[in-house]
Image 1: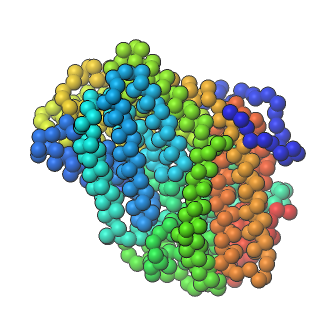
Image 2: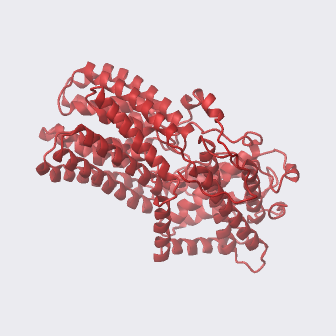
Image 3: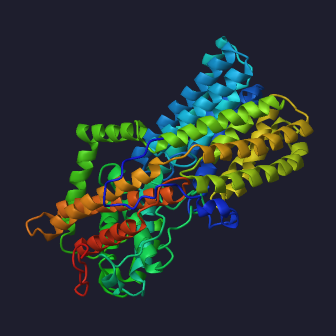
Length: 625
């Protein structure tokens, strides 16, 4: 893979790649450590149960449980979009349903035209790679491409005739339409629920930032700011408007060396990312309502925490921010913050920005951005190549060994590929442990599921709920429930020997994980360092624009607000690019000092240009010195 050229004089490039320290000591305990559950874990869990129960019970009533695999493909679409405001969720879930049906159609047509295992594995690997890159490019969020790959790979190895395909696709689309209704149903009760949660997280992060007692004079020794940032703001996908929930990648790729030095800067970085996510959520929501107006005012006050010199000053009082967050997250009315100078102008700017995003030119810009993420030179393409090679190797190896269901190995390999090698190693451990424990759970519940068809349906629904309830703690814990559910789905078509199912699943898991990670190490992503260089340049431009707007007395508050939000977005992208590159192997040295200086300078500019909400909030000088 070609690298993005390095500009002379700006980076120190090592001539030869060195063996990364991660090779000598990949993390293991941190990858398996349990985290706190998501504050919205019950939403996807309940949604997938409701979306699955109605089709399952309908097929049970007419005696056609053998068709569950097709309705389940549509029902699983209810897992997506739970961090998005409902206006965007409607479009996102509809796209997921159509994408699921398209992948299933390709698989069914292929299965009906050929019985060659080699061809089926090749098509399965290609579909997995395409689904991976499309999910990453569109930033659809968890559970990502894994559900698509599971459905399309399983359908490849199911007996099929061309005449049956329209009916089977109709079942998928019908169940998908019902899943769409389930995903949007909460809007009838709480129309601004996603926005309220995003704003509450921003207020909570700002409260932590405002309560920080850390030293603020250490910027004097730095090339600009007061920030040794380190928090991982989370991946920038479409769920980025909801940065807290359903994080299936609990393990961190490992902070850069300066990240652990200053907890206060980690808080500031996390607060910046949360505020950015809240603005993105509000910009993507529907028409302005009184509740959304109050939420926008709260985010303006959360931004002010960046400029507060310490705890207990004005609107940057952490206790007040926490109280607002609790009320915002609750079911009562949204708190009304005190009026502040410039707020009306800034909210007018938000309306103008929202109008631009919804206009024809805004939609064209979004499409161009999507095409750039899919085009030549994209850092997503090496990950797609990893997926293609890893899935193909896993499938062919299992077929060579005589394993009856090579699509399990394809799905296992596809599930490993994350943003970088370190995260992929974490996922390898999590997937392997979860699947091995899951087959033991399957062995225990199989006699219960064979009591009758209703017992089998109930077991599948239970494990579907359990998977979503546990997976936010850690991926391996969710896999303990996913594995028996996937094995029980085979029982809808008829009973299978338990020993055969368990043995095949264990072999497929081990081989899929081993070959999948091997492909990740062999296919390098040297474009990750080039992405860092591009993110650094974009951050420099955004910071300069924000400083110009902040220093210009004639600049409108709306213009200053847009400049701050653009700078915050560039910092989030810079953090993601740096952390992704830090977890890759076999690449040139990262510009650590320049990354640190850019993050520091960016956060100082945010502090200097934030609106003042209290008489004692003094701004630092603008920009790096």
